[in-house]
Image (cartoon, rainbow, N blue to C red):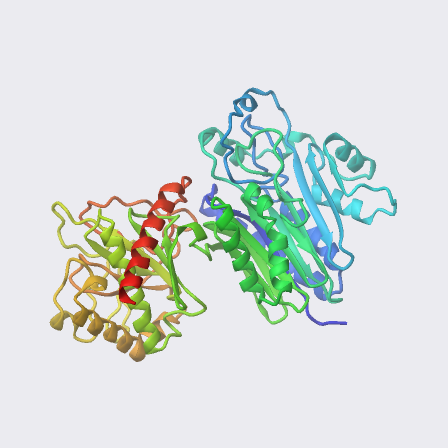
Length: 565
């Protein structure tokens, strides 16, 4: 018998959080208790498929998540448990006038050991859809359907003695209030699910959902579809959450499994599957959890939020909302080399914003040559951004941990007074790594930059070549003498370069409670304070203008590369 066990559960990928601070705390506590419970069950020898069923049933009953109780309402203010993200661009106005009075739910489960699969959809009165799917899985009747829907599925649940409830059970005050205030918007989507590895080395995957907020009546998404929303075999188990149409179209779960079986590492397989899927389905906003028979596990998302909990032998307990791990999507990528990928931001907080992500490294781990190459690449991108017009300087801020960051095209026309950078979530860094936990950042001095290099309105990325090389050398020197240590502390640090600040660089202590889990506000260009932040803003729904910008940047950068050659 193997001694490895593991569990990853999720409460849905989403672009918005409809709760308050109290509900956030409640959610974290619930996820913690649930993942601890699951781990104890697994260590006691419970089967993966049993634990998956039990955990997803509890997730269905938790009102903060969009499955079962707490399920999303359709455009008539009623529940249909399914999943999706994209707003359908055809005339379905008739759906808004249909007198639907029910909520329809769906769920699916796969036993990886046997590849047995069962799913249900359009349930109206079955309290826990996942329990019905599991009961079908356990049936000894050779004629038991693989997939059931609607009234027939509810009748089967009642016949099997499962808990039945009135459809109003699935309504929560918060969901109805959100529906009434935001009926014209289509932003919320979610699923709950789990992937599990037991002591016997067997895997299972389970998923359940309440669907997209304001979905059209009659819609079915990916959640319960094998190969799309979930997948499991003897090597890997996968569960997806997010934009149902895109997940279903790209068959995302099976993409992950196929890439993993082809020899890619688990995290690489998940990221590549998501990246490739956005190439054909740019609107894809999702999260993926996956676990393998040897105990490897990962959770990745290109949505702004993903509620997860995980535990396993050799893995630390994790729970709560995680932020976007893949902020760049394929259609918005404008530059890529061996070290960094850059794309137009789909969660911007300012106009003319780009996002960059380092590949399998961070500023903490880089050697001098890599630091020089990184800033050289960012300099080329900054020049291309400036050439598009609308900005005359470029600012920069890194993500916590230095694994990427944002570039901001700044327009300095009009009267702008030099002001301290308003990162909203910062403190200051001085050469000796002395932290001053003030709200406003202090002036920053690294080496002799302040005395040797005058302030330039274009920012250090666009400084003349000789000065730029000196500044990058200063960054490396600071990393070597203490900055690297500061970036590895439990505190949340980010590096910022502000063209309107008296100095060139700033190391900031970021307070993760400042905006989180809400989106950072969008800032206008012509303001007296720069307003940089490493946080993500609200997702842009219409991606086409961003795609146009990305194509223009790619063309300019390719022309530059050709000229260099």
